[in-house]
Image (cartoon, helix red, strand yellow):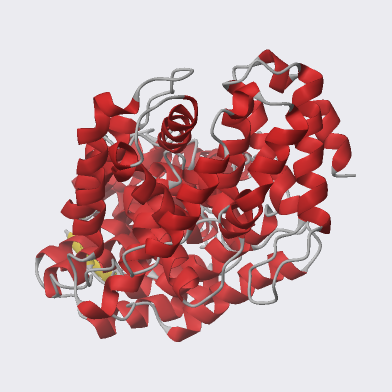
Length: 579
């Protein structure tokens, strides 16, 4: 006997949505029903719950067509055995409808509500009624057992089938942008369901792959996604509201999306760039004034460190903000704390595949120079490497269209700050010039790079190179003069350098102390002079100004990473200056 019936949705809205998304008929026969009931694997049981419902409904109608117990047993010899096994099954009570149908089938099989036939032997009637009562008792016992894990298993299987259905439709070319949008439009109905994150992750992954199939040129040469997200405006608005509620409400209150897995969040951010940009901005804003990263990194930080495409998307987004004038040195610091080369392995194949080839070449050259500098080493031995770095930076900046030059320049500039030892190498090379007889021309590839870091303009950097040359010339033999004199020399042009690029100024200040024989008190005096000058010195109105906090926090970062015990011992004193 073959019983066929479409899948029916459960009362739960989660299953209702999955039912609408996965419309397929299931075939169920006696042998399969018997095999299912005989099997105690909860995964198989949960997966076939709809088939059990169909089978027991059909069996009930068949049993109603029989007048006596004997006729039921004669016409359907497997029915009694199946009903007995079903009543003893440990998971029979997890689905109310299946359980109720089983009870109806047992009562109908035993003809419990019918007038006993006068032709039936009393012993047979008593045995039938006893069988019926025992079956009901067993079902009652099973129904009181907590089957939460079974329900969870069933839900998990439904999600698995939903994912499989999406994969199948993608492989068969059945998905369209409209179809994906309609699916995502239903997701807000399940916003409080704990499995929503799994559905969003599946839909986001399929959406990304569908876009890759449809349009191979979704990314322009700055890395910006030019295609429209397949997620509906309704879903995007709901997700943004959830995020904004977290930011604007009490910090202890977390939105539903905060409970999603990291994989689900990564997929969503990749598939919906505007949501990523909001979350990325919120993440940057949360930690602007923090002196160290949390012991448990934020999800956005974890995502950028572990997901190469998201790292590149974060680079593109931050570069766009800089190009629009939304600049804050604290944002650069957050960027360094999040994606420093000390944290991310840029040589990993995933990162190599996710970055443009010309940016990969630049990163590889930065990595070669990202070596902890010696106290003072002659930079001329590696000048060819600095020349190559200049070449790879230029190739990346000018390797795209005219419209994207500014954005690519900002991307290159931001990438350079992730290689802090490379910046330290630059400072040490310049200080070697201050303590030796090498000429300015011999140092030119390095000084051009530093001048570009100080102010990444599109001109030949003549003005900035002149500023740098005047500054370094004033620092000649700084290690042989008194600390007050060294302080004046440093501040002569250094105050403008600090305001133009905090990290370059801090690196030169700390490297000067590391390469000198000054005492701890001398170093403390120099730091105080620089901080006081920074706070009190009036700059022309057209020059950028930076808060004392902008200088203190990066200074503390740099002192923390110093291997010089004199400087590390100054950390408590410098911390008190920020109070």
